[in-house]
Length: 352
Image (tube, rainbow, N blue to C red; front, side, top):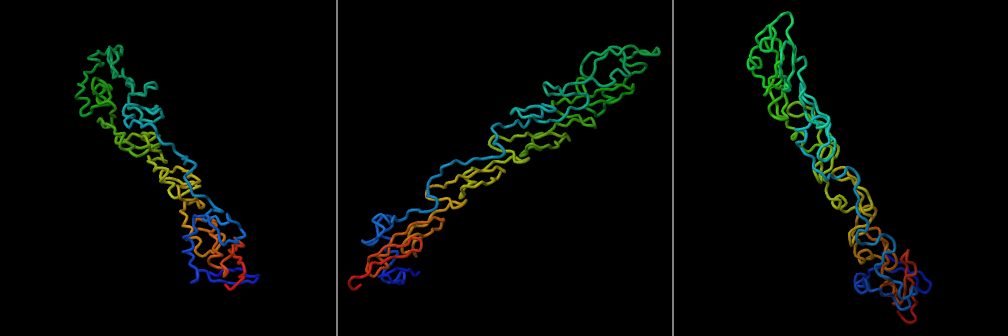
């Protein structure tokens, strides 16, 4: 690099880095010591402040904290078995409303307990007479027979077959027997399944619903369980996770999301918007939206004899004044223009 200077009012050009002066060697004695150039340096003893950042961000520790916007991190783990013992729409253990399956035939969802309760079979007294006990184990009088028929074992003019004969392989639900009566096939004279929470299917068999597996890793969505029921997965996820759309997600630390970034917003792995700090870790500066480690002053100023230079992080630094040492024949001079990196040299009074 060639640098313009003035000697006795005349423009001269000197080759920087010539055999007469090693810029790297000169830095060894100047960087960090705040020294000046030649004795007649018109800028004064404090003019050369080696390594000072003139324009750009100073390196330093983070100042402002990272903030996260978007789906909140859960602080409560919803009970995956909640819908095994509840029906309809009900608040779960995290006090978040969840939509569970509806109840089966001859049952209704109690709005207070959110559990299935027995309902008498419609037309229970059809084909029946006398005192009876319905499918809900409630005493239900069905009256006398019409047309002079005799009430025989609860049936008018007919001898009913046994429950076992009528139900056959059915273990729940209802069937119609030989006397046109609706017969409950569940245990204890009910039409429900013996296992709590089990679903009576159309073929008279019982299905134990698995409401956990279809909702694993899911949130705020509806799924079909193994019994063909539509259930809603919890709107929240296990503690420490967020509901990203309809999937549970564990967010990476904000420091990982913002690694190498500054003064910008970044979307993390769970769809949350993370606001990265405007400053960077100690020893780095924020260059736009990226953290940058400034190169050594000697590297930035390697081709600058005096004045300003821009480093790899966009900072403008003031390089040591080497005019008198490396440029001026008289050995006495100073930087006359910091922007154009121009030296002024004191004319030689004797031979140079």
